[in-house]
Length: 312
Image 1 (cartoon, rainbow, N blue to C red):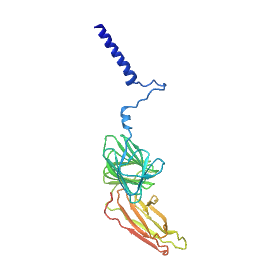
Image 2: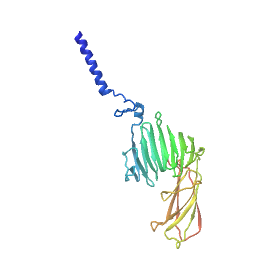
Image 3: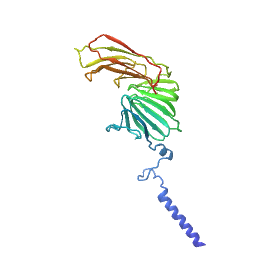
């Protein structure tokens, strides 16, 4: 019996030493390096990297990592943090983020993935519009930052859209609620509401989404061929708060009041018309064409009327 007890004690002691050496590694005392620092279990799980899966691609959509070269994006591709995608005119891409949340990158948009973990999904919207259907998942949060504006749209679960013009970020919420934060304050944009924030300012109070937006009014000044034969026309006008104006697919810089003015070159040489389009945060779009007519210096007023049809 004594021998059995001694053998048992020896076996238990050997198991304890094995546990100390292999399984259990205590944190080193303060000031002593060389030990293995261990993060709390919750933090380790929350920081586990995730991926965004490309569900579908329409038109020309490209991807790039960091400052690397752009390449074509295809359905089935997987995107990680520090990757960007951009869509051309008429193109779009649908991403699945997490288990059941979706993000649509609409035309003429560029967005960068900043962070994808179990705790945070963070994107930077350089320009353009994102349509988001984000499902609640515990304390996980979605953050969409407006590049260069200091604005952030944040939610734990909502169906909404974000549009960035480079100087203004607008949010339109369909279901749930989204917190829109600027450098000087924040507002909560509930379902059926929209709000905007200008760079470096507080967000405007949320308003109800109008069923039909204010028309985009354009003033088109023809140019004289003998002055500049390379110029097609000059387009100027104004857009509603938080809306984006695209001329031939390229975003136009708007001032604080939504006014814009741009000279459109005649390229190619046989160019006859200019495509002018506007979209708001809710995804409603309208477009029209402006003729190139350098031989007629008269001022024309062109009105583009909205229709009630919404573009998701």
